[in-house]
Amino acid sequence: MDPDGTWSLREAVALGCRVLGANGHDDFVWGHVAARDPDGRGAWMKGSGKGFEEVGGDHVILVDYDGEVLEGEAPRHSEWPIHTEVLAAREDVGAVVHSHPPHSIALAAAGQPLRPLSHAGSLFTPPDVPRFDLTANLILDRKLGAAVAATLGDQSALFMVNHGIVTAGATVADAVVRAILLENACRQQLLALTPGTPLTWPGPRETLEKRATVWPPAHLEALWDYLVRRLEPPATHR
Image (cartoon, rainbow, N blue to C red; front, side):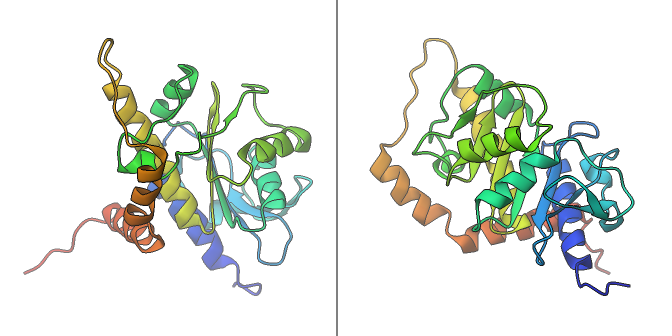
């Protein structure tokens, strides 16, 4: 059934989609998760036509670096170059998320830099979260995908102004958790933006120390495990 051993990777992408759908990233049938093909053929990514919460492993397809579908039956999302170009530019990245979470879009559209007001915010800044503003339109070709990747640089999150976000991680779990935490950080900041109320946040040195304390890999993994458990109803004990 799985001669090339990629079924578990397809299931990981699908699980990442469902976790996003349950945590504020649902936008009807739009948004996608992708993971690097272990044989270098491209990206295993969510097919189009389904919402995050609906995706199973059979809706994940293999797309090469020219946008050709090599495996899978689902239709391809038009913004495949976001994923393939970030993966091409970053050997350290194993998975990419692109979604349209409302608070992240609102904060970026307001021209507000993300501040480390909370634990979540401290994961991303300093330095500033980069902003892709070359276009607010869809990323439909490799040139625009490469521009997205160049703007992301070596960071793990990107605001696509008036469009959405991109997060990158070593694994699907890593990229998905970062997307969820980025949206939480933006939501918290928008809640604090009451006119006339000054905001406070720690300085760069303290924020980086906090990041190391609050967000070691084990904590990100524990958060992922929790989010996966929340997808399933608790066991009934008799």
